[in-house]
Length: 355
Image (cartoon, rainbow, N blue to C red):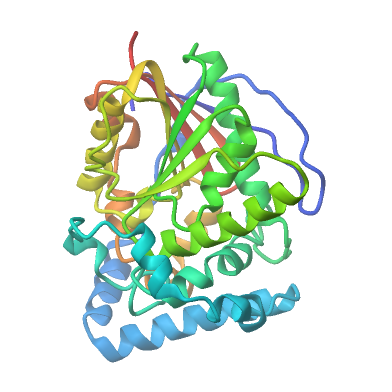
C-alpha cells in the first residue's frame, strides 16, 4: 500500500442526477485498512458451508432476497427475461464460444446463488435485472433506500472517478479499451459511454454471458441503424482475463469492474500482470471493487446473518479480503497507484504503466 493515495469521489444522492465532481487525493489513512469477519465467525460459517444442505439453503435464501428487493422496486425477474427465453441460444453460443478455452477450477463453482455459477443461461439472462436489484442500495449507508438507478449510478461514478485519476496521473489518450470480466456487457457499455470515441473489447470466461451480451448488442445495433447511427464500437471475446491471448501493448486502458472479489487473490494478481503486458506505455489499469474498509462492509462482516447471506453468493470473498490490491499492482510493474471512493461501499483504483 506504500505510495497509494486515497480520497473520495463525489457521487449523487439516491435518485438524483449525477453531476461532475472533482476531488483531491490525500495521503492514505487508517480508514483504508480492510476489515475482515472475526476468526470465530469465519470458522463457523466455513464449516457450515462445507455441509451442502446448509449451503444450498443459504444460497436459496440469498437469491430470494435479491428477487424480493427487485420486486419492491417494480422489477419482475420472469417478465424481464421472458423475451430472452425464446432465443435460439445454441446458435448464439456457437457464435461466441472458443472451444479451446479451458475453465479453471476456481470458475466452476456456484456464484451469486446460482448452482451452475456463471456457466448457465439463467444467470446470464438475469444479469441485468439482478444487477439493478443488488446495487439498488449502494448509495444509502443504511441499505434501506431502494434506487432503481443504483447500478447505473455506480458504474457512472466509477467512470467519473477513473477519468479524474487518469487525468491526474497523466495517462495516455484512451483509444483501445479491454474490459475484463465483461459478462453480458453492462460494464462494457459503461466504458463505451465514458469513452465514446474509443473501441472496447469485452472478455469473459462465460460463453453464456457473452452469447446474451452479443444478442443484446445486435438488438441495439438494429435500433441504431434504424435511426441512422453507426454500430457500437465494441466486440466480445471468449477467454480468461489472466490469459487473454491478445497481442501485447495493444490497449490504452484495461478495466476490471467488480471482478476481483470473485477470484482467488493469485488470479487477480495474474490479471494485473496480464494487463501490464497488454497495455502500451503510459496506459492504465483501472479497477472498481467493493471497499472492505467501508462502514457498510464492516457492518456486514460484524454480523452473522448478513455475512452468511453475502458469503453464500461469493465463494472467493475471503481471498479478496486478503488481496493487497495496490501491492499487487506495484509488483506487476505499475506505478502511481491512486484510489478514490466512488460509493459508500466501493473504490476505484488506477495505476499506470511507465512510459
